[in-house]
Image 1 (cartoon, rainbow, N blue to C red):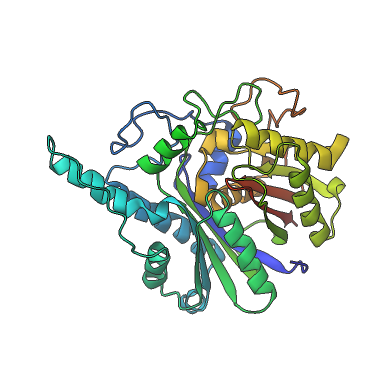
Image 2: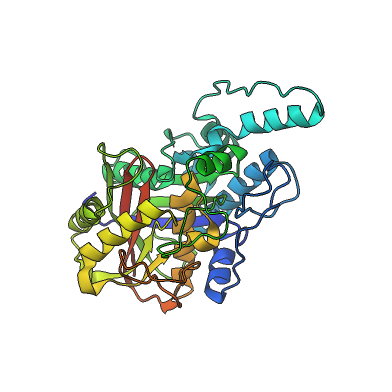
Length: 389
């Protein structure tokens, strides 16, 4: 991406902090944030795992649909999209759990209905990776191209950059980019089995961190050339998007920070901005040992003594995996609309290897460039800038 004429026309999110991006931002800024807890969803079969669940009375399939609808409705209303504009949009979905929720729900329902009997085999029938995407397109009358990206925790952040590039090339008129991640037993048990789960608290960049805690939710950004958000106080440009995959590592972007530094450097080069112009960083900050070390070292090397405030939202929202990109970006934009950069939750002790403390108090959010980073499993990397005007 080299042109700076891609605008955010609207956004929305459903998170553990509320059924809108605006509500989540206000709770973040006021510190109305609860830690992850057990028992947040009745269908979770292991009571040891704490999670950041979205409050909802009902089954997980209905909840997942409501999360998607809530984020989409907020974004479309803010963008003031007409039915004709929705119809000609491209739809880009980033998800992990969205591919498996129906299978898991059918399995757990079968077990529940046949208490005392042998569990049925887990059915992973191939419904196709685009099932959720297709449902959204049909329900909303979207006729443009559709994509589904499932790349763990960079799924929807990758989708944002891909959509922006297609806009820049004139291949689509506008993009509706969706991140979606329901809370599943599959992901909770999976990350716990990899020893990447923190049974106590999510502690991004903290010396005492021991793993992530899973969250859930949905996020939507609507991107368009030359169309600014009519429902926002400020103008937001999406610039400098950069994608990379490190084939040398199965799990992380190295441990010396060099790859992270290079990814951020490429983002700045594409945007034509310098490190000194970055107002704050919405970091990936999962709370895992290696990922935080890699990202922390890379940011420190890139910015040296000029490191701006660094914030991870995962201590407040949990790690929403495939939804993290759009969900966190939507909440971040709503914070900027409120004129505040929220503090980073879950930190208590400096890690001398990382060498910096993430923001421990709210900061003002002036006009300027804000860096968003995502460094995921499999050494997948996404980085982009959003300029507030």
